[in-house]
Length: 412
Image (cartoon, rainbow, N blue to C red; front, side, top):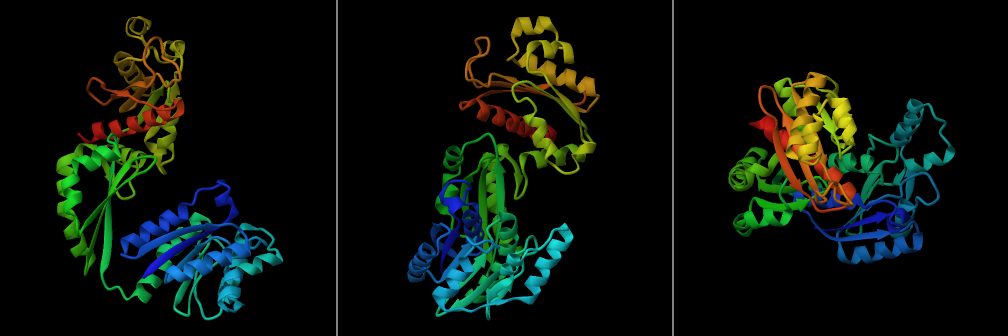
């Protein structure tokens, strides 16, 4: 089975949004052993879309479309496919009912053009949209499978996982179970990680190990095929253990863990509260934590102490300490962590100070960052970073490194 993904939308070509749908679909298909051979992006133009469909039919068995199922005139994916493949569009009663209920719940008036979203191919398998309005659909015509999905990721992703994947497994006749486990790393680059586990990568067969770098972290996806989920996990476990024995110090979580979610999980496990004093990050660290649901019982508060006077007057950092060591120093980070811990009477205090750039700070090189973490009954731990990047990337990476080191301290 060869798959081509065709993303429809002029906004993709204009660079207004990123084609995250294609990467999501490809990664999920890889997990079930279905190969994606081509990615295509085409604008909201019926002629060019039909040309893309014609090309796709010549080189793939399955064409998966995302986008163009909405109510407006430029949403013409299913109309173009219907005309091209000789399919008939009919209104699906259940889909129309769901659209009407969607408007009732949101207390909005449903305009006539929204009924267009309920149109599906006659004889197709309708893929319900449980998070939006336009349903998806899947149909076979002359040996080609056409699968249509909505464009918004929050609608497309659950539909693809819950509806399209079972459909594809059914038509492919696959009986194997394929499952994955994702290891999340921080503080190590993709190239170094690959270098350290090169023997594992060279010997892989089943399970397979695939590195990937994202904006937040470097990941390794371990994927195994077996008759059952339990058997697949038994294949994954020894590979994970071997990887942990080599680079376990950089692993902060698995699967859906993020730096902030893992930090909050550990804080809650210990019953700890946290406060933070931020200089160069100016609230980015606390904002990452505040994204996590249920954080209110753990996050007590914090202060932004961007300049020297604020550090002294708001937190009580010793002016003599700053005069002797400077604001970008181990001593300052320790003091920030300790004083914010005392000020908010929390179990944990975090202090972040550094030179974000673009110019050095009192002679301290750009990218120099100190992070202090004060835990109960102990001297604050400190970590030094030497970052290279833009001002804002240095600030964001500092906040995330603070989360990573917090996880390490809480895991001891």
